[in-house]
Length: 365
Image 1 (spheres, rainbow, N blue to C red):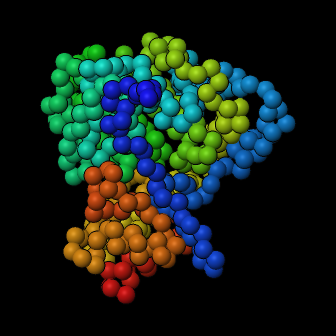
Image 2: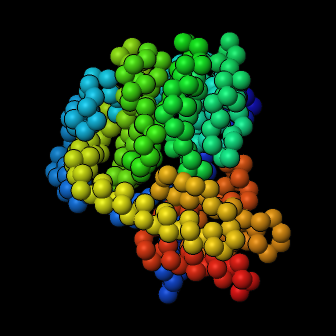
């Protein structure tokens, strides 16, 4: 019996695997630290804006996300006409791939880059070219060395998930200058709100001064709106025009739009979230390092913890040990990091419990 056959390459794609969710058990408190969710939740203003939509669920959303684009424009000093909103930045990444990649093309990503990049690339018939990193950080020279006449797009998460590392702005500019003009550079700035480094820039300047660079962002991280699936892109007018031609007309819900406007305008909540992350990221890095475990320096809202390979001390054993204590971290086999766990910065209670759990694990208790 005949049946529909997927396009070439589709069945070669490894499905995206999210961080595991905890299984509640009677009498045990569980902390989910596997999905880079903010422990402080969204702004109360965002929650209220979301609730106000409930009386008008019969109405279609405004199709261009105008109100949200204008709010983003005010917050970042951008032209709203050069902004596109989507159902999470994931949708925008896929729209970019669909717009600029086809059979026989190549797109470059780094060894431990976000898993959506190869999915978006291969879903459009293009080849996913993976380049090595240096100290878990994107390497500009390695990327440029893999560029061929077939290269059409370069994916760069800055900061990167799951490593937490970043490229200084001068390196990003060097990358852009070294790429051919027809190659689209996609700067994924999902974690940029957590960065406090003088040599970092989320990509706005490059987008504003070139015709072949875009920057994507999300409301899922510091704004705490992951459940609403909302992200955005700032790009040159010709790229915005092209992507808008295939974007769904009502791809962002009214509830998501209104909540996101309220969230981006609540700067006090944003600063509180950033300060909490910085305090506990520094504390976790120091305390975990004291246990003899290596922690990759992070500028995001998570830390990458490396474990030895000898029996009794592996990342898989640590993962199982912590899970039994109700502490759920992210295993990273699918990111090519089988000996590491990623931990989202949690509440004070969660952070202290993880350090206590790791101390007992390393001591063989």
